[in-house]
Image (cartoon, rainbow, N blue to C red; front, side, top):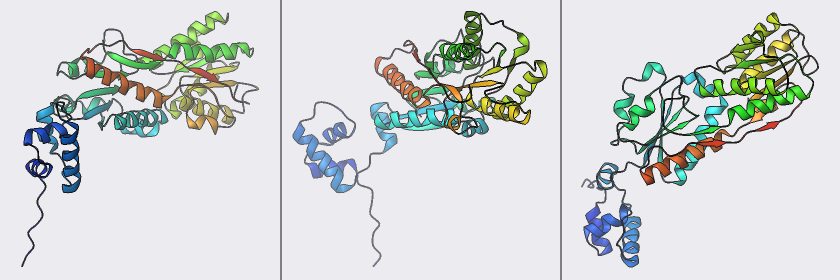
Length: 339
């Protein structure tokens, strides 16, 4: 005789085993109040005995929560999976959401994939949205908030885009790097800056210029090239700088991967680091400790940024205030042999 397949336990069965009403069992499962300790324990025991798993869709209808948070990274797969910064932020976000019993939904959404994104980012699918790596005057935060979802951005947004954010003090960090090079007696301090349409790129360039002025070093446009935060753009930028001014004796790179590329070019050109050219990066990524020589860099913590993004989003969800003030995280200089 064929065995009848076991059916999934129901809420009614949980209530019957616990000796309570269906409404009481539902309140316990959905975290509701006005339930006695005795009834709560009986329901929890019944859930464990029956192996009951709440229906996520039905629970969302009752609680008006999905317990899911979307992280939208506005970059290509090549950048997201090729740069350690993104991995650090995702780890921090994932750990913080797990501690808050929330599910992470990761979405890669560069300019080619925006079509269906906004249709998905609604309260039917997620409770809030974290955005990372916005470019230019991207109004995606405003459009998502128009669906009633709270939004927090990683990185200070450009002027005109009003949203809660978490960022590191990029101006301060770049200033520390350039001041260090000036203190070492370097006079022709170049920069391989980041993209001008990203606040990280423009802010680190701003810090570079301010620190040159403070150190009585001249600002020279020939000593400025821009990269896209990739290793290849750092190597290419360093070649351009050497062609423009062979006397360059220091370079501040807006991230560590570009600094790695710059070190490769300097080695190929027969320039000694730091004797001929000192190099400083930004991020303190793991690769900075294994370069030859080890890289002086500005420390930031992508993991801390991720955790703070989640904290601000949860605060926004709890208070209903969609425009809580942004938070800036400090940086510090880590001096190694490259400078």
